[in-house]
Length: 515
Ligand code: ATP
Image (cartoon, rainbow, N blue to C red):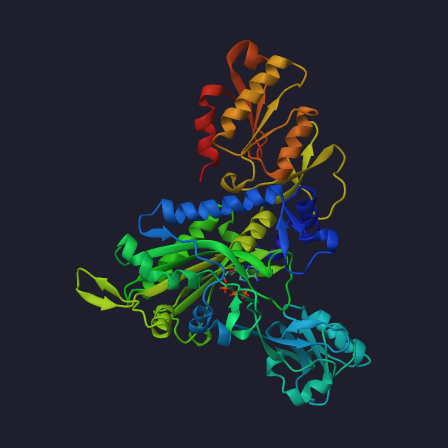
């Protein structure tokens, strides 16, 4: 499947997310602030479920990984040792005319192959060549021919040629500034005085908190290498160009594992974690067909890394990274050992060797995974009014064909769905029926996030649950109270119903919704 095979447009998804309370623009009443988002009542449940599935797979279902929750603000020397103060920079450039600001490494240039004096055209990476040619034709009085042009990286254009360069959002040449390095870390001051000795940084990743606590964790758990330390938490990057909804934000959450290994086992451990992580993605509802591995070439690796594979997903706006899995050698622990003067060595009881462990780091973004799951789950379907086959609606179609009605359904994997079960009394004006349904709702709520709804026709209530992705609807009817103590359980995806005894309900639900 390719990104453009989607049954959803970003517009439709963004609208559903706002309407149903998944994601809101932060401080919207004041006009919002670029790169920051709030998660509404449904979004917060979705995110909590993603984190819970990750945490369970890392720390509960395995004995070799423990958790940590380190502070967001750490000693600034952590970030000097890790290299972030010196190197965590992106090249940025501005357009003097439009005041647009761009990440230089994400801009490409459509340029004449031989004529050094011809105008050149800057575009966002991923722009179709046909769109580039259209602009080139417009600004060269129609003379541009596709065969005469090539696309090159902006960073390969010499500065003395910038006077011929037309920016992405203007028709004038010579308005782009030269690229300059911009550190992505947010700075703040600790204590009341704003002076350089009090500078601190909001962490741009959670990983360094793990490295800085390596010795403490080691001496408390006494695990044998290989073992891991996992952490989930907020990270902050002052991104030059936040975009694609929540995909590139300035405040986001990471789920990171540092898996400490014996030197020499890096390649096999790296491969193992790539496979493990892909299995996890499949389990939470991202199908193999839309997931990809981007294996970094030896030249593209950081000097200390021996392997790096990014896990990518086909979003409607392109194939993009959800997680990076890197074999980082012992670079981080060595840096901290050198900078702090504290030993980061591990003593292997069996071989009686002292060494600084190597590490494999699977580093995932919660918000990007949430966005991928929202994209993947969204479906518009045409349901036949009088029985027959359900059709997938055409993207952007406003109306269903004659004899069909539209249903919007979020086909979340049950383990990450915000609500697991909706409990619905068939009618609301029968006290005994309502009491039975309320009792059942309260009982199930002790184990799962449930929804109680007694308003409106039952069909409309099912549709409301479909739209927020609740996998199971349990309906209490007259037979439940008068006859058999059974309920009807409706499946969100197939819309099929089964009748079950209330006593069997917990194990039935558990089999479907638990991770
Ligand atoms: P990118 O190249 O997209 O900027 P990165 O390679 O810098 O990402 P890492 O430093 O490897 O990202 O961070 C690990 C994970 O953290 C990413 O795979 C992503 O899921 C998440 N992440 C990083 N930056 C952001 C961001 N600005 N907004 C949301 N999530 C992010």
